[in-house]
Length: 233
Image 1 (cartoon, rainbow, N blue to C red):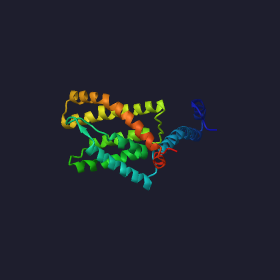
Image 2: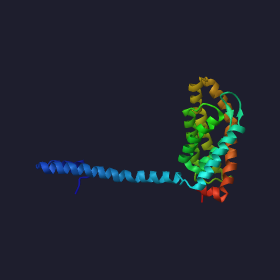
Image 3: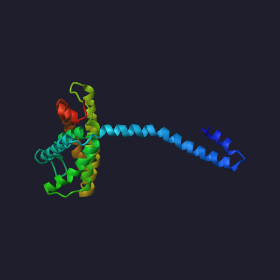
Image 4: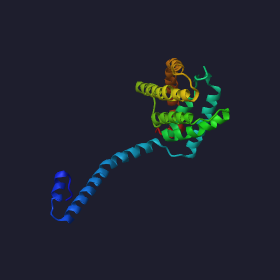
């Protein structure tokens, strides 16, 4: 029987035969390794299974839906954005971005957002910066992580709180951390300018995003074809 603890291991090591000593030590080490593998294997299996649930299969229908959503992102960004200053604008791209995350999941949403962002920037005649690609990818990942396979009901108070939490998280990570850092180091914009305007904007933008998200996503989830793409049965 292989040793299970230090006491058993010591008994094996006290054997006068060198061969037994080496065999016992080798068996003990191998047994410990096997125990650790068997102990940690279920954790990784559960993690892999959980990630599989978040990564939909790329079907023709899903690719078509992603392409349409990305086209909608471009249209909304170019024609439905309100520029307040050089470093601040009100955008409604969160609507198609939310839809993208809901149908593509976190991984594919981040991948396609990262691929499409340079294309959109080139079409607009601006300079492509890796920082903005990263910001778009992180934003898409968050949308996908929380809204893919997540049924929502406008009559459910818990769903309103859920969406509010996601909106606040995105505001903190994207609007208050990543974007100000990028603007400060790329263009030298003072921190006080970046955060003072964003705090004022957030007061109005957060409730707006919550309401619009709760109006749009539950309505789309009632469409059988879209519900299937969103992983909702």
